[in-house]
Structure formats: C-alpha cells, structure tokens
Image 1 (cartoon, rainbow, N blue to C red):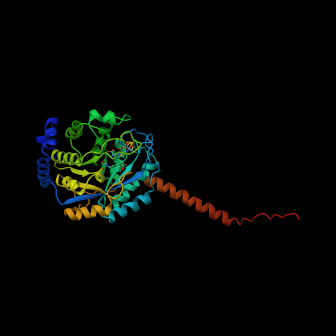
Image 2: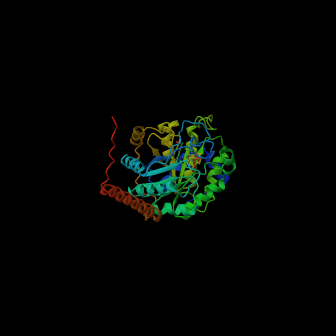
Length: 367
Ligand code: SAM
Ligand code: DTB
Ligand code: SF4
C-alpha cells in the first residue's frame, strides 16, 4: 500500500491534518508500526559538495547568488575529500550520505564526472548514496544509476499553487520531469517539502496531493521546517510551532505508509519532546552532524543522547532497497586513460632532458 486510499483526496487529507493532535499521532504511530520497525531511525549525513553561487532564486535558499547571505561560493569539493568525509560519517553511525550541489541543473562536464566518481566511491563504502544536484536529464540519471546512486533528492517544496511565490526561475513541471527521469533510471526517489514559508495549510496538503497523484510516490519524503536565513527574501518568516511539524510528519506517514518520512531541516527549533512525537508519528530518519548544507543542525552528541533516552537504534544501510551495483563508467575510464597517457609523456620528456647531458653556458663577468 504505497498510497493510503482512505486519504487520497484534498478534503480527506486536510481533515486528517486537522484532527485532534494526539488522535493524529496515534493513527500515524499505528500505521508506522504496521510497515516499519518503530525503534529504528536512520542517521543520514549531509555534505555540501558544491556550495553557493547558484543561479536560481528559491526564496528560502541562502545559496542563491543573488541574495546577500554569509554563504561564500566555493568550487566543487575534490573526490578525495568527499570520500574522507564519507568515511567519517560512516564511522559515526551514518548509513546514508546525501551530497548536495548548489546547481540549477547538472551539466555534462568535468564536475559531473567527478560527482560520478564520488557516487562510485561512497557506494563502495557500503553507504546509501543520495545526490541532490538540481535538474537532470535521462542520460545523466542513467549515468548516476550505473555509478551506484541509491536515491535522488529533488523536492517539490510546496503546492503547485504556491510555487510561483517561492521560485520564479523554474516551474513545478521542471521538478516533476527530473523526478520522472530519476524514476525511469531505476533510482529511488526522495522528494518532500518545506513548511513555514508563509504557505497556507492547503499548500502543505497540495504538496502531499502532488505525490498522491504520481504513479509511484517517493520512497523517501523529507519534511523540512524553513531555516530563515538573513539576506534571503524569507529572512523575516516567523518560526513554525513544533506542533505543525508533528502534524505534517504524521499526515505524511499516514498518506504514504511505505515511504520513509525524514525529519529534516529545522530540528534546532525543536526540543527533544517535540522530536520524540515526530518519531512516534513515523519519522524514521534524521540528518546527523552539526551542519546541514550551510545552516546549523543539532550537535552530534546531543542526538546520541536523544537516541539513548528514547531507545532508538540507528537504521542500517539498504534496509529499504538493495545496494546498487557500481558499473564501470566509460567516460571516467577514457578520462583516466588520457590522464595516464599525458603523465607518461611528461615523464618521458623529463627523462629525455636529463639524458641530453644539458650543459649550462658559462657566463664570464667582466671585472
Ligand atoms: N540545488 C538543488 C536543488 O535545489 O534541487 C539541490 C540543493 S537544495 C539546497 C536542496 C533542498 O534544500 C531544497 O530543495 C530545499 O527543500 C532545501 N532547503 C534549502 N534551503 C532551505 C532552508 N533555508 N530551509 C529549509 N530547507 C531548505
Ligand atoms: C532536504 O529535504 N533537506 C536537506 C536535503 N534534502 C538536501 C537540505 C536542507 C538544507 C537546509 C538549508 C541549508 O543548510 O543550507
Ligand atoms: Fe539553487 Fe537549490 Fe538553493 Fe534553489 S535550492 S537556490 S536551486 S541551491
């Protein structure tokens, strides 16, 4: 039961969202226990592999070049440093790594080749690899799939009706197309939204309806609370009440019984009791580590303490799907071959200079 047929209309979902809170949490907890192990919560790590300087105008995002925030644009991280961070994350208990790039879309260039290599490397570590790189076409999706990509994150963020109030540089349809491209390539879909952007409750329901209307809803649905960042158009948005987060998590859990609901950005605004109710209501993943992409996240030790108090255990990798097999990437192979050839030529040229018993000209300085 990927979509709950009892709640597949706007009206029924809205009524569900507005139920007395504890009734809603109870119903969500019941469904959660039917389809998932309620003691397990996945620890996922986020890594901003390409920060800032983005061409888009997403009103919530500190990485958009046009807003004056504290985020400084950086180049793509190196493959080596990404793999080092991945190993650290794994050692600290994370079973999934989500690599985020502040790109409007994926381009077929050297940077993308490097991302493909990162995906291969992280999959080889036995972690679930997720990427969020903006829009991508079918070929790019296939290349990532072959590299071993487990999931692609591409959020619809809000309802179709409210979308234009948040972003003007792309359409809702563009987002749906990319999700479809990931799907076609056999990549697991991670797509969710943000609450607290000034949207109506109907827009939160509208977001969920977009997933109800899909042939297959996302396997993973992150629920974020807006982190209002100074310099963005949403800097003055009032923080949401944690009850709203609990309602959104619970409603999502009930509407999509088999999906993983992720309690994502915004946990620094919640206390442990609020987060506990989210876990009770079916959230089964958090981002671990004191930074999301660019904004703060609860301290790692605090989260460990929370797991201990609530009796939660970290969920292992691939409990919701098989590990993808990494296939050789022809473009990377050719690039490495050319690089090796160039290095060989350089070594030969250097050796030749040495052999030519080069004699420096004697210079006599007149007294
Ligand atoms: N550029 C890619 C894209 O937009 O798809 C990937 C990176 S983007 C930062 C990933 C997601 O982060 C966005 O879709 C949005 O849901 C979330 N996000 C960005 N800024 C946020 C904020 N201030 N508060 C909460 N979520 C945020
Ligand atoms: C998602 O839904 N939330 C994460 C992940 N997918 C990529 C991103 C949250 C970003 C919060 C703002 C920041 O740290 O820049
Ligand atoms: Fe760019 Fe993604 Fe931020 Fe939008 S959300 S500005 S696309 S990094």
